[in-house]
Image 1: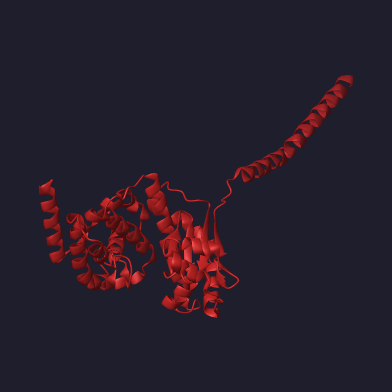
Image 2: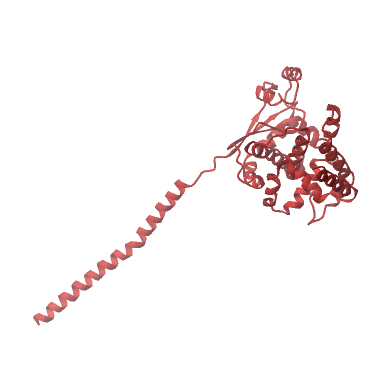
Length: 337
């Protein structure tokens, strides 16, 4: 009987120990949860915050152009013209204010564009803060200043494209921003690659590159290729532009003693005027679209070729008599070397 009592006491002790053990096991998942929360907290603390911003600033103060807007116009206007503009008292119109409102509404969206726009430029990095300076009486609708400022002339935008409230202008201003942001990327690329533009030829070829890439970002869909073929709009336009492109590039590359007047004539409409007149920028933009095939990583090699990209693209894409003339130029150029 005594042995039986000892047996039951031992059994009860074992059962109690087992219950305590199970009780501890039941609390274990809670410890895991607490640990995972710590990891999440830790990972959120260690997460790299994106500090990049697009900052809109107004270059108008008390109905006059601000000193900042005057400074950005310094390389675009004569000193006397700048002084004259500084004395003009002009209140923003309702139409100009509409453009300001539209642009101010875009900052978050434009900031989100940055990674996709820099794909062809690989590791080129711009300043975290990019300013969009708004003014009037600048002449051009959009341009860049130094390495971190995009300038938009709200008066010129209204004159060129009408009301900011038109639905078409919502997308248009996005494309204009993309164009100018690409110019900032090219400026930084040129700086990092120590690009030298010592001759008129270098300058023209480089402008074809930068404006071609810019227009690749800003041209509307009617200019983009359909598969591997030119759109009907591009094909028709290039009947006039290809001969002009060919003639001017050959002259730029072969004639070294050009007068200022001759240089101005050759440079005219390279990237200014209506789309159908832009003999340098538009063909290059469409050729880049043909090269990209919907993937901007395919454009990395063309960025890295710098001004040399133009001759290679022209050799590949010119057609008909323009192709014959350009090939003859390349052949004679090689033989002369």
